[in-house]
Length: 351
Image (cartoon, rainbow, N blue to C red; front, side, top):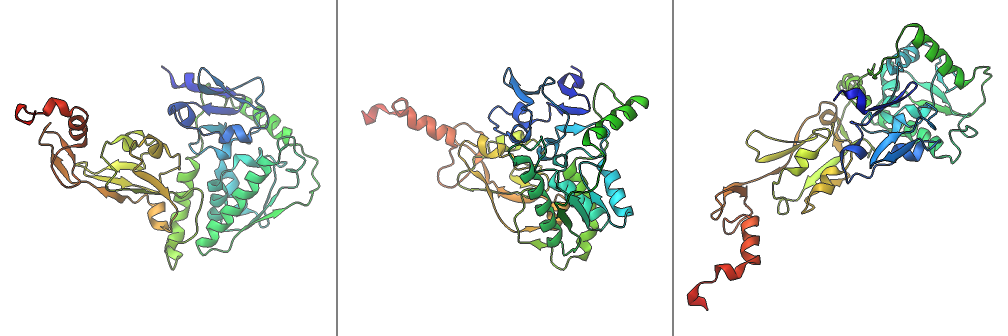
């Protein structure tokens, strides 16, 4: 079936349901877009998350919070904003100046804006408090927290450029709605509204890591002690892991993988989005998330770390390979079967 069938489109806003964790994994409980949406435009139909065209306003407030990039605004290219900041002497961003809601920017986007041009800039948030998109204040908090985290991350790179938040009302005659009017008119004129979205930029996390790499040479110490919401660590308990392979098979970003002979489980923190599907699907609860310092080089270059190495042995009963933990060489499945059906293995001499 054509991929366009799985994309909900309301004007310029596109929702790729195939990228949505809530749709692809039955036990996933992600509600980030629903929590930020001011018009309750995300609904469930037949157990799948959908975009309701009757209530969606195309504001873009939900885009920045989505960890998989399932949401996007057509022709909204972050690289153009990066170029603008690099070019202008005193650059300032506000949702009133040809931009969607600032919720469309993820923390990765704010970091990229700071690093690309190596320049500080101002972000005017004076409209957020009285904005109709922010009735509960949740959206405004998300924007401010993303900016603050971006500033912390750039400081951890030993860089001085920061985003200054201002709440002073600028003298603007423009309306944010004009952003969409100009945008749609330009898109129609150039026949730029296809039936399916084609992203103009790489996913925000990948774009950020690419921009980050030149800064690594300038750091005195690549070990970062602070915790950031987009950097995740995993550990696997040696005795609990059965090497069932389910955590690797269900990882949506392939942050978990095997080596060639499947004796080692590898983890790439630069690919992990913290969805915790691996933890939810692990029956013995062997894998877990932990907070720890991290090597920024490992993060930027997606270096793999060995989480666990298995000693594969052949089970004396079923002759299948299993992760040997010591003792008699019988796999857990056979040992459990023998225990549950002990009467079947009782000898006549033992009666």
